[in-house]
Amino acid sequence: MKSVSSVVPTSLKPNPAWAKLPLFDRTGWKRMAFGELAESTGERAEPKDAQEEIYVGLEHLDPHCLHIRRWGKGSDVIGGKLRFRKGDIIFGKRRAYQRKLAVAEFGGICSAHAMVIRARPDKVLPEFLPFLMMSDRFMNRAVEISVGSLSPTINWTTLKLETFDLPPLDQQRRIAEILWAVDEVVTKTFVAAENVNTVVEAELNKFLYQSSRWRVADCRELLAEGPRNGFSPPASPNSGRVPTLSISAIRGGKVVPTGSLKYADVQDDAVNQFRLRRNDILVVRGNGNRLLCGRAGIVEDFPDGCFYPDLLIRLRFRDDALLSEFAVMQWNERICHTRLLKKAKSSNGISKINGQDIQSHQLVAPPIKEQSEFLRQMAEKNSIAFGFDRAANDAEKLQSTLVNILFQ
Image 1 (tube, rainbow, N blue to C red):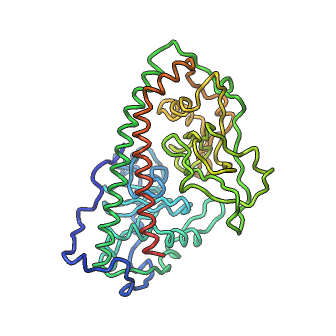
Image 2: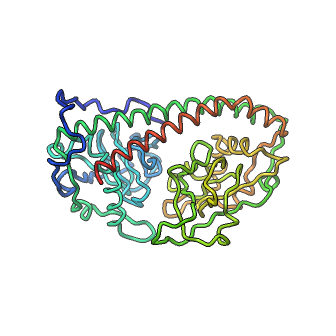
Image 3: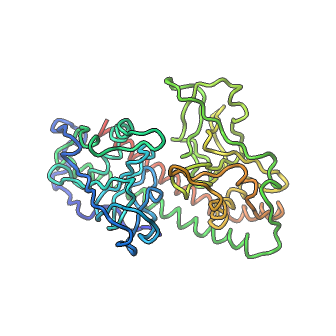
């Protein structure tokens, strides 16, 4: 299920004198402890008493996204949960580096691995608080104060003592208006991309499954070489010189290096076998969001010498078996992806697939001529969908840049 309603908070009332308010002037800002401006509600809920209520787990939250786009039901889960109300912030306190944070547009119950944060409106506007929490300043501190090795977790008793600079309420209102306006652009372009993708997927589904004439084969029969996990060198105190991807590079069926690059200090011979080539396919091997596990992207443009990390798997199909672009479209198609996800194993909140799962994964393999003709027919729609996806990504970057300038 998805929420596609308008996302700009209706409670924001423009200040008639907003043009006179200095947006970046920090003269009137005050430093205060997080516990002074917000509270962790901690209201418990038992699933047996909330069978028909909306349930939001960490797997339902997308990194860097303020909206809950999918959810489950209370009857799907066991164990104690937390209750949240409309307007509360659901913040993933487990593995904070995943940056999972969303504003509830409805009430329900959520994972106990989250905190339910509520603004103290005499100190901070509820519409402003999410952007403070999205900032690098907040998220970096959240990671630093997390405890535990396998599943680092934030304690409220520690977080509430962390201090942050806060502008006056009038300035908060103006900042929130601007940032929510940018967020509305992100959401509308995301919805537009999804609508186009729905049309493309319907056409692909018809092509793949409404004909019994196409060959169906295990991937091991179609690959030019076995699936290969990437390489993640130990963290370096220096910035490094060799570019490598993060798993966030897999977007909209493509590998998009922009905004997803890191740099490592490694010798060339250590990463030569992991360097990218055009038309390589990279598959997400593991992710805390189960729905992103197994997603694939095709490599088109990339920096010289770029290699891929351990949480991605590289595929190279035989030229006479599957065209790379067609393979990626099919791989990400809902029915095909769901089959692969059934093979995924979960450990410590991370869903993972392996090379053996991929080897036995079945794909439809029409003749190359038929694949090529289908791609030609879908080219314009795919281009439109990716354009919307890129526009949403650019708007997200603008939002992130503004937030981090404000809260540096």
